[in-house]
Picture 1 (cartoon, rainbow, N blue to C red):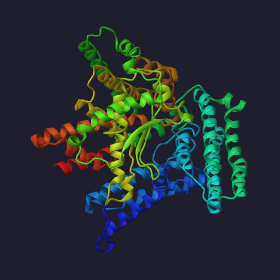
Picture 2 (picture 1 turned 90 degrees about the vertical axis):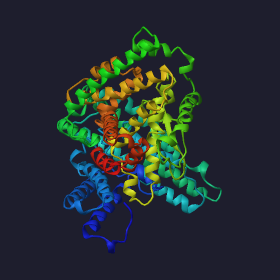
Picture 3 (picture 1 turned 30 degrees about the horizontal axis):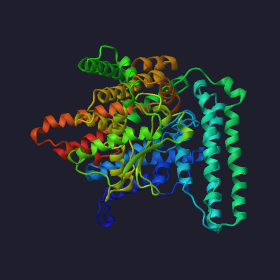
Length: 572
């Protein structure tokens, strides 16, 4: 949203811009955005009840102000930015109502069921730990400031424990199978956090010894007890005895209704859980047909599972060290570089690479996650799970690479953050359906321009397709239709081609961590692909895929129907 003099604006546009500024004041304090702005240590996430109630009031007020606007008189870019504000405010407005079943530690609509889980408390703390690891003290003033950081950190850990305790008081316990990994996860986070907070090795000689002793004492007095209290709760006989076997948001009172709304929130589409479930089954049947056709062309007479097993014995598709795994990713990074300019009118300035996932969360994440460039790190990084990837064949690395880096997450997030003359809210808008839908569309597009050259790579792409499509079935199955964890895992064993470790972590992610989020990947991919092909048919010979991509990227982070409207207007 281009900045313009307010004395030349219509009163409706002045109000619209004021609403957008109000939304920005909230999201700028969230951990992901604050980290990018270099402010994460100034104001750590506040997930306490008082802060949640305040964000709920603010979210409802923003929605009411947007509803009162006559958007027909506003410029297109202002309307688009209001759509980003509405998406964020819709999440904030529900925080207090949903708090004990699903809370949003990131402040971006990633509602999680339980704090001691990989994509909830662990994800937030990992952002904080990365910032803490870069802290260096040069004098006593720095040391005093670090004491305040320690207090903020301890407050965040206490809040994670307070919510977990409050859930238990209301009869909401983490399922037994997730609880098994919660204590090791929190124990690992505790150690990393303590190591990052103890800064003596990163302190200059000009920092007084007494100041360093005060830092160590504050950590012992505040941070260690906060972690110990959470671990004591999770490891208590009472909590373990009450941990249920059933999984899924729908297994808790009121959870089914919340899940239906999460489906809409994450997909930005008007779909019921049943419609998503049915699409997943239909999509899986198509993928398995493509697999059989590929194997027939390759002259392989066995099943897709047998073909994947055969690759596990081929050194060309295995890696045993982090460096070897990184080399597989970089092979595909180099492969796409020559075609990037012809497929996209604008490419990001920021470089990108891969690195191993932090050890403390490697046991709770299947593949890893992408982290965009930060003030103290000028390149985007995909953090891969070397433990898991070293134990399996790697034909899917090409598809994973193109989803996570270029033309996937790194391309769209870096361009979004590098955008000039736009309101900062647009730089950090993050509708899940767009974010993950674009990344999966990018992996599909990579195949259309010849990036999966070998039959093994094309098969690996179909493996990733099957894996992500299985989410449509098992996420809805466990959260809406009463599927057990074992039924979901049986389905993934049969259709998703993942190993037992990956299946275990993924099914817990869908049913106990961030329900509904995983639906956005393939639904978003299909939406963007269908939008492109529809425009190709309408425009004819004048259609240029680079123009389409640039238009979609300019609509980054918005709900899919808004993206479609903006792209159609631009290309028409």
